[in-house]
Image 1 (cartoon, each protein chain N blue to C red):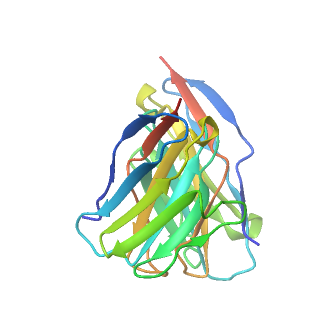
Image 2 (cartoon, each protein chain N blue to C red):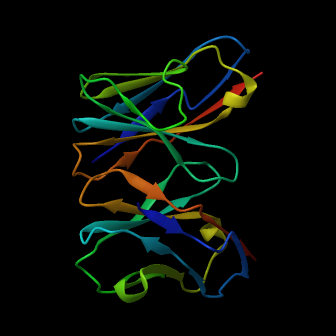
Length: 114
Length: 115
């Protein structure tokens, strides 16, 4: 069965600090997709990234970067020079076997203070 | 592209009444739609998956007679919470996909409060 673990329930940082959100997954499939979503206080899920199991290249998008390591079944997300607008709940999710059904982690609430 | 809307964005209803939530894919045909429920400070829990023209598949523990899902067209799915009670108060989120092997696009969510 698939499982996603986000061990950090809540993280508080001061603006401009770098912060890493951890995500560990479990799956028996060799083909799967990993996602990160942002959920601001408004509630709407914002898609951040999708990565398939065959692409272990790290990705950078502006202040955001993702580190995918199959050896440790982790897909960690780093925000560089955090800003107050980054305050939100961040969810890591897994989709097995190319199917669209998603399993979400419990989420990490990030609070960035000025 | 890939926009999903939900209506209403928030609703307050009295205990014992029913409330219907609509989920629409605005610019693509959604063969598959998903309904999630999210309680405060918790993760999204999948309630059911519906394929256009078929009966919905409910997750374990979700009462199918209480949460009626209809996916009658490729752009619209509805969730009806029947005989709502305060414990049904939650944030309901739908998502739509072009099929089983395609990505989900999420709606903005509907906040339901049952008084």
